[in-house]
Image 1 (cartoon, rainbow, N blue to C red):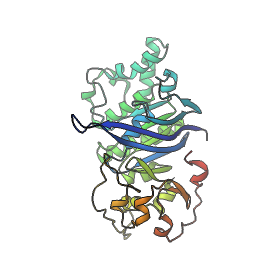
Image 2 (tube, rainbow, N blue to C red):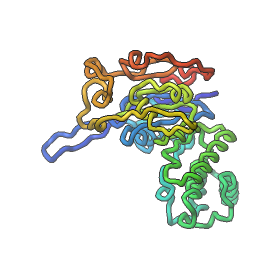
Image 3 (cartoon, rainbow, N blue to C red):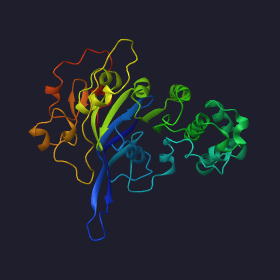
Image 4 (cartoon, helix red, strand yellow):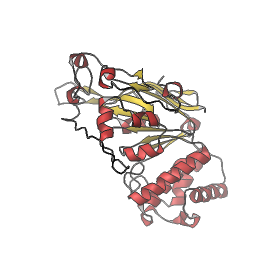
Length: 340
């Protein structure tokens, strides 16, 4: 499959003022994130709140300009220091977490879905109206609902509208920022099924940001685990769920409910809170909470390196994971999703 999105060492730095007479400090919300994504595939980005997932989403869609790094769309380098061309921005769209806050309450559904076409295409009014009708049917909504306002719809219907709006310009990549977390369980399953169908029909690539690992296990082809603005583990979904290797990934996955009857999973409880971004600790950012920490961890900042069909940012990963990775028929991440 063709590569449609590549991020190389993406960084996002914010200035934080401490007081009137004190110099500002730098907060590294993203600190060198790299990945690649092919057409028709889903990369899930997981981690605790504040780890940089939503910052990554805003950087990928250029809602915020990255401080450093490269972003490639369909093999074309995006100049992140200039306003990207409209044709380039059409290739990547975003669906936000809150279906109640992401839609303009003063506009009808027709107006909201038609607006991207009005601004970016030369379609006639009747052609735009037909395109809106077709897209509403595609996401499971009746076309006659187009003249209604967002408050007349349920949460699941609103998220369908948000998905329809993101697809109006036929993007290649869709960034989904917690798209089902605000929905009831039954509605959540319907939206996930819709996203899967759209991906299969249109060949879409998804960057799926979530904290719900049961959802990630169902939908993802590859998983990137983030902590403190960095990727700490990156692997195909089958590998990372069967054999997580970074201590943080192990703790994160241990909290996932087990569906199989009689199967038990030992819960790993992390002590303390993530470090302050204003005063990051020396060495490994996870060190203050890691049960395996040693002196080298406080001295050396780990970077992603290959280990057992995955990329792991831990200097003691071999010692922590004494058991070998089970054989798998899944295609190795090292050849299909390797960070640049």
